[in-house]
Length: 269
Image 1 (cartoon, one colour):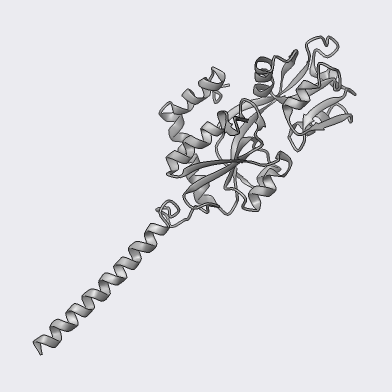
Image 2 (image 1 turned 135 degrees about the vertical axis):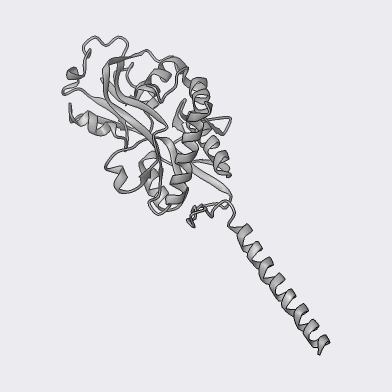
């Protein structure tokens, strides 16, 4: 009788060991995705934060020796590290970048996207990771446009699918769309457009980096909160990104990255 009880004990012990091993194995497969509150981060590639940008917005995001670099890229890399994921930046044409996110081609958009009410109907936005504004730029030799009211009926260049299209429509119907803000700014000096509306930071950086003979006009048309977009069915990822941004700001890492690229803290502009 004692032998039967002992054998039964051994069998039960082995069964429990197998069950626990199976649970441990399943837990390891979801590491990095399972959050303490039971929510899961949905990731396109296991163990990676895949985030998109146009790759045409120097110095925010652009390619150098076939590698994506820039302010947005470094912000994405730091966020990935703090979440415990490998950084995986990718490019996508700006005009279809939200569709790509909704189609699960990537997990987030970290590409200097303005958080707008219209876009919020399709995606969720993080807390702002920098603050900028819509700025008017003209050729350095242009003395006829000195304030925003002078834009009336002028030909204005904007990046296609950007919020600057709506800004330009307030002044004119003659709007030329470009795949990149830089291409639009390059058309100012030869006179192919009278003015360009773009992000203030992008325009000022282009003046220095590309040595474009352009100048900014008047004050910004509006302030803009630039944020990270994620899919609406991914609240755990949004929560993790916001936590990472907050910790970056608090420990000074954000300011260090911002000053490296622009000489100022972009959250204080």
